[in-house]
Length: 466
Ligand code: FAD
Image (tube, rainbow, N blue to C red; front, top):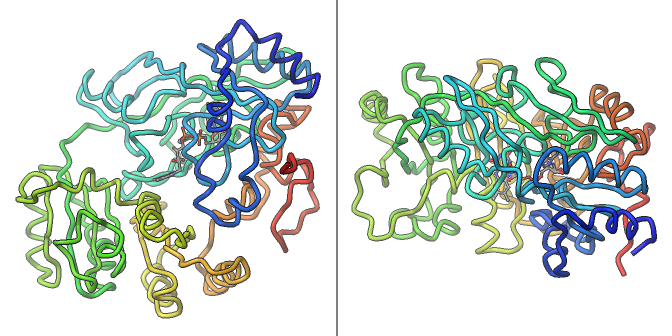
């Protein structure tokens, strides 16, 4: 361990420091291995030490000491991100927020909490307090933290109704600690939220969060099967456009993915069935059944409140969003994925075009998403991986067709996003992390302002594999 890192670790010895080598290794990793491209480049990364602060005062202490010793700090919620976001590119300190799980206040329509609470525990607290729930959560609800969702995620279950995290109103307030000689504590609302939300912890550490809430329901979870893929895509889109029917999830899985990859659905679908996963509010079920009755091409194969399945499928949302990829990977390790934006009003045409071009090498997995009041699709397409060159070609063909790709085979904010520099995040990093020690290697604009995106960015200071 370099001397400066050893000195920082010694100065923090009174805090909760992980001693177990295997635990240090596992807390230096996330779900980067979903990508064969990232797996080949990041597998060796490991922190020099892991510290778990118990409160904001201890976060400030970690940042102050690491600043004084020039030690990089990579923050960890639960490490369920897919882009290597929580992985320490230059070693140093991983700051794990697992102790910061407090719920401070629940009021009508909002909750104030610490960042390290799991999404499921936050939901449970809001439901027990006043029959409320968070509007949207990543499908890693059971394992991910609210802080990691805001700093690393984008949206998920609930986004068909509420839009994405970046949409106005979906985060109310963030409290943020800077990494300076004397760290500052700042409060952000409105325009300022964009500085640190989805910034991978590169320019400030979120220590308190205020989120909006909605009434909680015992959602009726369903699987619906259609023999025609486009019928299924239209079904999901039209359901989301039914203004009086409240839904929390509408996912579409192209055949034969449900038959091949969803083990619990095996006896209930054929390899011709495209399946739609749904969460519908109980009071909307009458409306839903009328909607369904008008579409004889669709058949309900499972509903959580009424079924005779010997083994239930578990939560339907754990088949959606990036859980689809996980289920496919478990059966076929050569599967990886792409994140596609099929924007309104061309979404259905684009989906059809990409399917004609690539199926079955690329199978469609769609998530209904609301953006600026319009229903469209996020695609988390399942890709049969062969080579990096072919993957790049698939990306290029999507982009040329007008289907924007958020590339999950890159570890930087820019390449995993819209390939543009976020000036607000960069400007705040200059102010809040002048030494560039927070999650280094993840913001190209900081390291190489002239980078032109013609090839994959390779962070020059990444710790080398031994
Ligand atoms: P981590 O992975 O620990 O961290 C994510 C990023 O945030 C890192 O860069 C980290 O440094 C930073 N960070 C964490 N906490 C803080 C903090 N307090 N302050 C500043 N920076 C911080 N994502 C979605 O958006 N929607 C989905 O539906 C979805 N589904 C998924 C399904 C599967 C099976 C998997 C493996 C991943 C999925 N993801 C999804 C990605 C990921 O699970 C989510 O983004 C998740 O919410 C991240 O939470 P985490 O606690 O694991 O964060």
